[in-house]
Length: 266
Image (cartoon, rainbow, N blue to C red):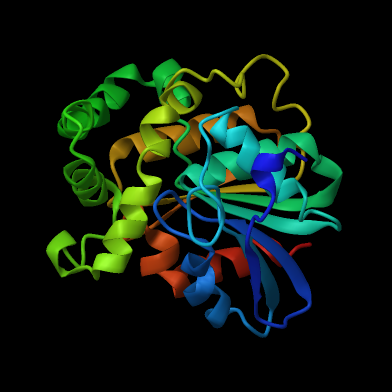
């Protein structure tokens, strides 16, 4: 393990018999899974870690590939077969983990995976719409305004409430701390520089997979879910009515119901 990954923070929730490993979204931390874990406390023991530059984990030093470094951090916790769950950027990390250690992943749940390269290949017109929505974020970043960049990003991808001015300063600071990893991951997410979609790369991912999106999320997310479903050997896609991009946080009961139904045959 690289020195960069020393001090990665992880925690566990619940005391149920089913072992779950979860990877949070950008600008959040492992505690984002608390609501879901509480709903499923009798069913699962959920372990989650803070990605680099998030929560109690160290800052990313800008060296190496951010997605792959976090996958490496997650793999260090993958010591027995688990149900692997990831949200947003964390879902792309979970996918890389499943590619690397398929024998230790009993099932794979990808919630709103932001692997935009799928849409670039399958539905470029739909991707163009979200790229247009992102231009104010890009402009704020290029202007060096970190707070405005984070505020606009949160407006596009966050839960909607509370609004930025109403968030505690500590939370705003934590989100701004993590924000630089997002523009740095453009090549990974949009251009597939890690070759996740290369011919044969997803062949190891043979475990049952569930792709979950929110009906109110940007349409590109449904396109990504459909595209990944076609590329994986045992996958299906579902949508949560009335939910947006932050559905594991805003709709923990609905997410729990989907997971129980997905895992039931196992």
